[in-house]
Amino acid sequence: MENVWDYPRPPRLEPSVRPVRIVLGGMQIAASDRALRVLETSHPPVLYVPAADVAAGVLQPSAARSTVCEWKGRAIYWDVHGGEIVRPASAWSYPEPVAAFAALRDHVAFYPGRMDACFLGDEQVRSQEGDFYGGWITSDLQGPFKGGPGTAGW
Image (cartoon, rainbow, N blue to C red; front, top):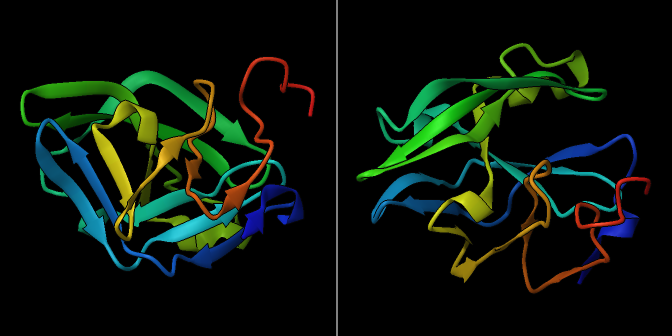
């Protein structure tokens, strides 16, 4: 069992030991056994999939927003297309991450709650609450988790 309160701050980057699979619009849009996960105090892990493991044409640049992470750098957002479904600004990446997170270059993170389903191994994950963070909650993870109402000051 992992407890998110044991995760470090600043965050740690490590390979995922379980393969990732993402489904939208009835199609598998990404599958990887090379995903990376970011672990940060109070947050479920965020999974980053190599862009090469995302189906062609699934990601389109989103003009919706750009954000800055104090640890990773400036993020850009992607509209995600799967089958007949389009989910605006539902994935993000760091085209020029800071040196400590250089491994995130050419990787994409997806909000699991905006996809039809996201899997780690055979387990379908639950989404972190809120509309900003994109953590993946599994049965072997303990909280409480930041993101829901009243947690902004944690």
